[in-house]
Every structure is written in structure tokens, then in C-alpha cells.
Image (cartoon, rainbow, N blue to C red; front, side, top):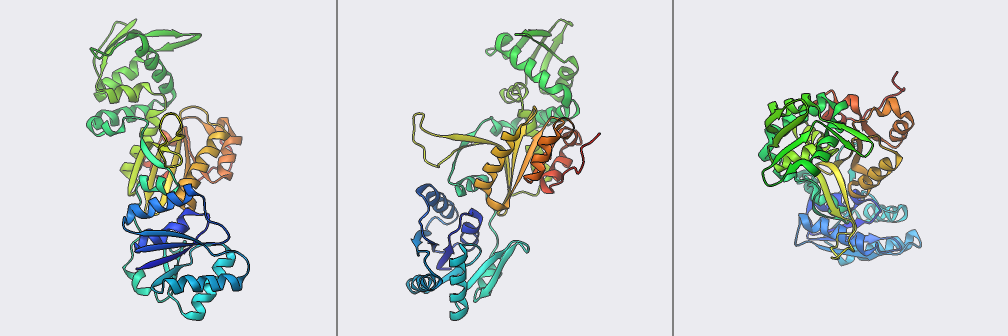
Length: 399
């Protein structure tokens, strides 16, 4: 395909689906009455060029006065690019009507994406292109690019997961089976490491009971022994009052002492093992506007778990404690901005949300946010993966 004419609309999926699928030499965005801001233009251009580096991207304002004027502007654009195809997947209603009228009257090559069928449909003259086309497999970096952001790294050392995968999976099994005790145990380890961990030798020697302000932190001997059996801890010795052990690695130490990281890794592993995804990422840190300004002038954010399949995606926010409505709005906004209307939104929490905070659960349900709560996590990673794939909600508050 030489030139693709896109009817610009404030929906990234509609703006990019055809460009990423057909890899044209040129993409011309027709904008009705305005040119999108620089951040939006850069995000779209970067997403297109990531898939097709040599592609030229242009934005043209065709005005928004009348259908006859828009009809004429569409004709002028086609006259400039006679080798073009018009994508009518989205667009402002006036421009969409004008483009459709032009294509019908002139039998001009055109197509659109059908959400229900999950494929492009030929309007006129594009059957051959569509028969050869395959929807692209977007990775997480491309998803963030689509929203105008730029992936800069990860919040956790997930790159080391493979090295310690067997031990990490043992930790996940313990986490799932001892969910009620885990946060307290993680808080104990976190506090103990501040005063009793020797970074030089990698040895932790601490009392079994610690006082953090007015909070009593107790080491769970049962969890320590379970972690030893999983290979996450070594050289475990305890006399009932004190405990000594080594963490298997820096990654395992981070996993055990970072409250909430086990939940993130559990969801990540569920998506990797049981989800049919093209890409899965955990703790994705990104720059908000896609431009690194330096010093302290960059706005960054983090998404706990993201998975992508074709042009669809799942955005997951993980909360080890009780979430609030701000958490719902945050992950909903991030999913809409970086995944568009093809993004599913999920809140994973180790809290009994439906039992203890029914109003928040209802709000999530009304917003279309899937809630994976404590009872779901305790059913294991295969069940979690099913929840990621197929949204479902409780109708009534559980007893």
C-alpha cells in the first residue's frame, strides 16, 4: 500500500489499526477543524514508525464547515495521492459521511475495521490487501508509544526473574496459600533488613519479634521453613527467639521485602503461563509525554502488569491492601490512554473487596473494571488468567 488516508479521531486504536496492519509508505491524517497537539502527533508518529521506520506521517486540517466543503477537501487530498486507500474505521461524523460519500460516488478504494468480527472489511477495491493482511502483535513498548509515552524501564528487577524462576515460583505458591499472613510477614522482613541485614555477607540475623513504632512485627516460622523448602532462603537457623538465614539472591530479597511485589509477580506469572498473549510486562515505568527533559522535569508513572494480544491489551493495577476509588480511576485512565477502547481494565487486590468494601466493588463493576480479589487469588494462577481473559462480576454481595 502506497498511501493510507486516515480520518483522525480521538481514539488511538482507530487511528493506528490500519497503519500498523498494512504498513503503507505514507499515512495522511485528515483532521476536521484542528490539528492534534504535538504530544499526540509524536505518539502516533512514533507508533507508526516503530512498525515501519521509513513511513512518512502527515497531518492535514480539512476544516469542519459543511459536508460539501469536506467532500471537496477529501477529493483534493485524493487528487494529491491518487494511489491512496481511505480507512473509515473512525472519524468525526461529518468527515466520515463526506469520505463515505466520496468513495461511493467515485468507487474509490476504502475499508474499515469491524470490531465484532475482529477484522478489516472491504468497502471497495481493497479485497486483495485485506486477504494478505495480518493484524500486528503489539508489544508493551508500542502500546505506551501509541499513547504518547515512552517506556524507560521497570520498577522491579524483573529481568532477573528467569535466573531464580524455580525459587520465585515456590514463593508464589506460598503466597497464594498463605495470603492472609503474607503482608505482615513481608513488613517484618522489610523492617528487619533495615537494621539486621549484612549486605556484605548477605546474612540476616534478627529477633523473631520486632517493634516498629507501635506496631508489633512477628516473623512467621512456618513461612520461613516454606521458603527454605522452595529454595528462596538458605542456611536457616532459629532458636525460637532469633532467626538467621540468607536470601537466595538480590531478586528474591526484593520479592520478599517489597510489599505488593508478590501479587504483581503472581498476576504476571498467570498471564505468562495461561494467557495467550503476544507480550506481558510487569512494573512498566514510562515517561508521560515521551520526551526525556532531564533533571527533575520528567513526569513518570508505573503500570503493575500489562499484557497485549494483537491490538488488544489488559492493564492491571495490583493493590496488596484495600484499594479506593482513586485507584479505580487511575488504572481506568491509564488503560484508556495507552490501550484505547480495545483495552481491558483489571484491579487485583489481596483484600476481600466484595465482602469488606461492596461500594468500591460496585463502582469497579459499573466502570467495567474486572476485580480479582483475595478469593480469586487463592484459587491459583490458572483462575487468575481466566479472570484476565473473561471479565466477570458478582451480582450480589457475598454473605
